[in-house]
Image (cartoon, rainbow, N blue to C red; front, side, top):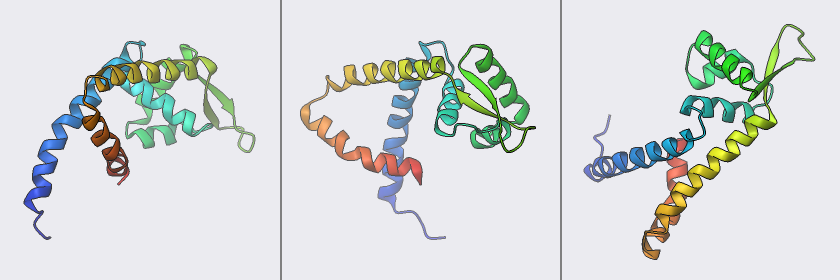
Length: 144
């Protein structure tokens, strides 16, 4: 295995704490709505994949099926998720996000955007340009 160039290692050391700190602060801003970070991830997954089952959702989030089942039941009891029968397999139930669940996600997105906008206005125009230019690379980095 080839050695990683020192400049890439140094960039990782510089980016990691900054990205983690911003991520943590955005998560905290979203938690003001009363949902945990894991709740939000589950709602987002169900919104992206309507009809997903609990097992597939557990696999996607890399948690155990019993843990996911409890989380889904809690979100369902809160009126944020609903189960619907599968037309092709009567034994299977899929999950859908409710209007209340979508409303919570909208609220969280607004809380996070408000937090970010407040901080971005405190940066110089040149710093904002740098961040705008870096955004596609950061998105690609997350998807690799």
